[in-house]
Image (cartoon, rainbow, N blue to C red):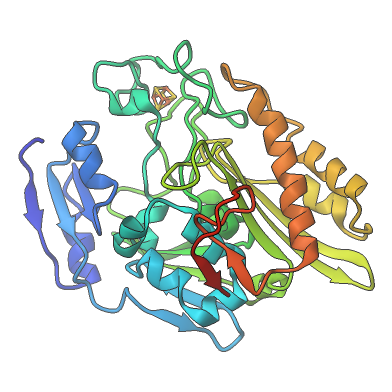
Length: 352
Ligand code: SF4
């Protein structure tokens, strides 16, 4: 690990001022950043420890029924907040699908949004990686790439975004609150992570020095609570990133779909919102045929980036399955690790 300056600001304005210097990064729980620093894939000159900033560790219910989640709220605290899990069950289910219990106890909401790709070549300093070293190439293109992107990738980078949490947040139109050198702004979470194009080193829409201070879920997101699921397929039952994942939410009225939300994980450099599929479901009866059509539309632009054509069909199937399970209704006792609907192992249940 390289030498770096360590700064512990007492307020958000102090943190933002400290980050004005080039080569600065924000440190929260460090569950991802410290790994990346130890491996050498990130070499910040200045680490700004935001863990003691006041006011960022609260879950605040808004008068209209939405919720504002501080960036330093721990993943476990949010997932096990009874009211939150009841109102936003797919988000709680996604949180409990991620990492391990120990990591979820430490990892923060803001840190989850900012985690780096798990592409092995990004972390291996002997490999060419345009994301880590712009212009060096992409060894994943001709390498071990069965888990890489099938949507939105470019010749320069085929990495995926690893977050579970972000997938239902994108489906539910969450908003990211940001403080920066030029003041406060907010953006839809769907625009936070960016596709690689010719500049894969640019992973988010954040400008230098900008700090995520909160994530908001709008009241509208709560209207999907009765029919919402997050499903994750992975190579082992726990402590693994998604091969493919899907968040689905339905509003059912008089036997027809009033509104649908679908987002995919593990398929692109950002959580992938399937808007055409959502529109196609509106007004339809919730049949297997309608769900299959939605899955076709969700993956219509997909193409393999390597040995991963199987992910396209897998993603179609997980969309159908997530919609089918959402239709059945959000379970009172939600399957969570290791009680995945794909697992035969009974395990820790999460009472939503
Ligand atoms: Fe780097 Fe992206 Fe290629 Fe992986 S896929 S080696 S992160 S450029």
